Amino acid sequence: MKVLIYDNKAKDEQGIWLHKLVENLVDEGIEYQVLTDENLSKSYSADALFVLGGDGTVLFVNEFANRNNIPIIGINAGKLGFLSEFECYDMKSAVTLLKNGDLKRDERSVIELQFNGQTYCVLNEVFIQRIYIDGFGSIVTEASVYCDGLDICDVKGDGIIICTQTGSTAYSLSAGGSILAPGINAFSITPIAAHGLSQRPIICSADSKIEVKVTGKTLVGLFVDGKFVDKLEAGQTFKLTKAKNPTVFLRKTNFDFFKRLKMKLGGNGVNND
Image (cartoon, helix red, strand yellow):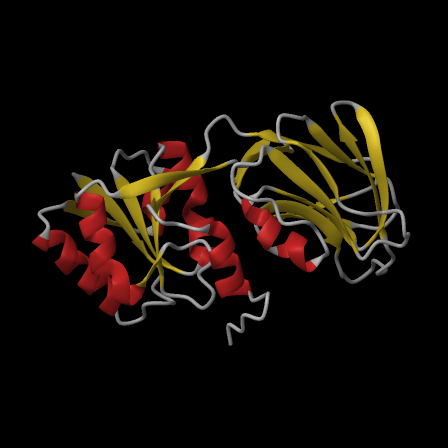
């Protein structure tokens, strides 16, 4: 058995958690390799990828894991850790369960974004929103969304979010979008601060072909999993489809999405301060 490790040094400044994880892997006789940022553009084969960091770290390595078809085991060294299955103090358990084959696969759909000749692998969301640059006003964003060629909504507001099931608990949720349980073959289209009572989130099949066209005069920013990609002007479009391969997480056999939702995000009287 061979595993890869990606350690977010900003979350593990002294390398303490990395050292402990390596110790646990050696004790179980598991071969390992620690990845650097430069390694993420290369091809690898492994039984699992341990990710030490927060949710942002998981999003950062998603394209690498998806492209190489390597399942992710998240070790939360960040704050929220919604995507991670284990806390740092529980990493020995993670290694033992992996060695014994006692983890289950949790497959998550990802978005394939095509724009300006580039293809992006998106675990959470793609969104456009107005940006503030000298020489451009901060007027609202206007855009039309097409689903399988049909004009399904025209949004006027701060922007639009198109998210996966995984991303439905992130930015889309904050903007008033619905929570999509894992396994639902759907994407959510969520307006951001819309200027109309009729502009509400729309759930569409993840098998649909989605196209977004900027129709207003203001300059907008295109973002992928929270990272700025490019600027868009009136008339420009981008297309989204479900990627061929899902991103896979390895979870405990008793993984309960809704229990985690209440524990991490709060709700039903649960306080996660």
